[in-house]
Image 1 (cartoon, rainbow, N blue to C red):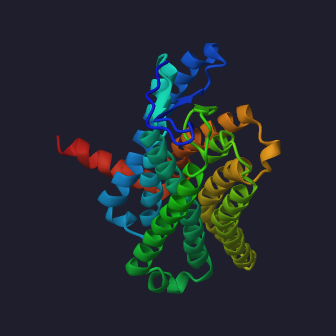
Image 2 (spheres, one colour):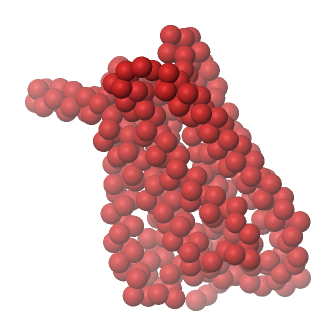
Length: 317
């Protein structure tokens, strides 16, 4: 494979990277291509449906569905930042990505991942207010506050991504251009560095703790208050209804944070690259696909809105 080289400083810079992806298991590549393509199509359909329903049905013009449509849009962008490149790599011999393409992919995918961390925390706060302060819900969660919290999630997520992307690409890689991953991600990229990266790893670990554990702590506090409020409800029907409003969000949080913490907060000397690839497949492809189904399968409002819109579409023919 041919790599164009730019003018090198200390003989260490390249204009491109070789994404090794799953090339060590060529028998898996065709299977993975088909599976990833199917998952990507379902991700596009599911998340687009959530966004469309949230905008078309007036009954879904609530804070919960405002944040859910933000999450669906985020998942669409996140998957699209990774999957097209992966499909190209799995379908042919060319497994390269340009230097600029790698920078952009890392910045966008990391920014979207960080944004999702914060947005899930915001959604937990929304559920806390809905369960623990139901009479004041519309006053507390007014549209301006919802827009402010969503905007802050995006801003903080991409600001953190900018910092980590700059730190990552300032590292000298000393002629190494083989990235043992299927997309540009920090844990794999750090293995290319040819200097002591202990300080950089500490800085990135601190940033990862901030982006993962602080929102996770807020989620746990919110659900602690929710559980206490639910246990005070005397009727079992009321308890089931309260748990039902939070079950979908808690499932999404568990899937997202479980895989993200595994990928970013374990010691680098315990990091298995093969395990890292399959975990990354899960949180870049599987989780964004199943999120819409988690929210719709147990949600009467979304299913009702879908039936209503489909029925109106059928009647208009």
